Length: 113
Image (cartoon, rainbow, N blue to C red):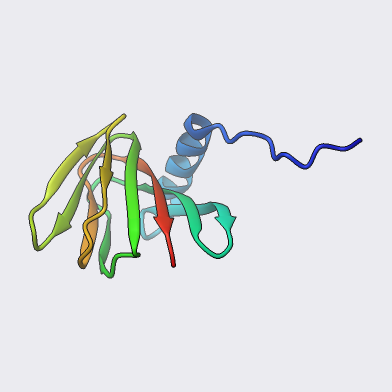
C-alpha cells in the first residue's frame, strides 16, 4: 500500500534556500507556494533582503505571518508592527505591506475564501 501523505516541509531549510535566492535576485525577493488546499488554504514561504518590500496590497479574508528568519515590519493604516524570528501575527484585514528590516523569511498562511 502506498502512502499519499506528503513529506513534511523543513521550514528552516526552505527559509535558508529562499534567502540565498533572494540575495541573488535583482528585486531582492524569493517565494514559493508550499501548500494549496483548494479552495481555502494557501501557505507560502517569502524571503526578502534587507530593505526589500512587498508593496501595499489587499488582505485575504484571513491570514497570519510567521517570521522564520530575521526581522520585518508589517505596515498598515491601523499601525505598523515589527516582528522578529519566531513570532506569529495576524495580518490586518486592510491594505498592508511588508518591509524587511534585515534579511528575512516568513511563512504566510492565508485563507482565500
